[in-house]
Length: 391
Ligand SMILES: Cc1cc2nc3c(=O)[nH]c(=O)nc-3n(C[C@H](O)[C@H](O)[C@H](O)COP(=O)(O)OP(=O)(O)OC[C@H]3O[C@@H](n4cnc5c(N)ncnc54)[C@H](O)[C@@H]3O)c2cc1C
Image (cartoon, rainbow, N blue to C red):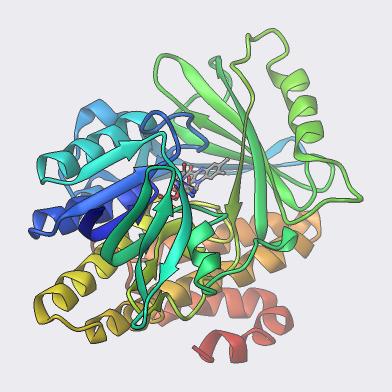
């Protein structure tokens, strides 16, 4: 029987970074993933924070950076309405290289990474959980980390999350193609009720003269068109003669994370804990930030031989990080019901809000950032205030 200090289900951003941090602190760590290869397939627009933000967690390395982002452009029903240069906006990753880089750090720190194996069960004990069942058999661990993505099996088994409701899912699909069109370093977003109601199409710059072109919808669209219909129409209009890569599909949670992130010695992190920005569906920086908070708590709990320090994980996340998620949840709700003429105002309000975040410390928030939105949406924003401050 294998025995570890920590078992982590999921070898993607949240699981790999958690494994690296905990192994570096001297704990024995096993990371299990059902994928056969780290980082593949890539189901991601690959846009993330800038080098300074990444460096808060580990050194940035040019090998995993495809391109620098230079700003933002918003198109409504085909016409470009907003185009802003934002210095140091962020970077476009080579996501598979990014994950492989973190995996190497974790391995060098002593973590074991096992691929092509699946976690299939959670074993209860008197004090919490003694380990997991997996395709490799029973494995015991003092701490169990669910970094197993949007459908988190372990999070559901522990009762911390449930199946993702259709309204809480961002469903997206994307192609990668070679083209100069909208390939100027900015992130281009296309919205508007004629182009894609209740969602957006994105064109993000990549390396080697390529762009990724994707479409995502907020929530379920049983009666409406599917994201593929809007993406195909967009491709036919702008990239009709370009050779498309394989179509990649994916789903990200766009709910707000649950308040309780731990149960006894089990902890949820990343998409498993719904830590994605509900408006942009960006979750990479949040996954790193949360894994960092969680890692500190596990290390302390291990050192003290007590589960008490784990409570601090939920408390810390429920402060500013979860509050920011809630603000973006409200913006998303307003955006998805806005008439076309308000989309630009929404984009400007979100851009101003983003510009005011102190990105050297990812999660700090000047409350003055909320005032433009309160002014802009008056009644529609004010009705959310009790929920926002409820905690
Ligand atoms: C189409 C799309 C575009 C996106 N674009 C962006 C973007 O541009 N920028 C950004 O910041 N974010 C983006 N995101 C979100 C981002 O990809 C996620 O937030 C991020 O991947 C979260 O990482 P994670 O480690 O929590 O989970 P995941 O990356 O989902 O990884 C979970 C891992 O767990 C493994 N796993 C699951 N169940 C089991 C099991 N039972 N046993 C073993 N292994 C298991 C899976 O194989 C997987 O490797 C996008 C998401 C989608 C769907």
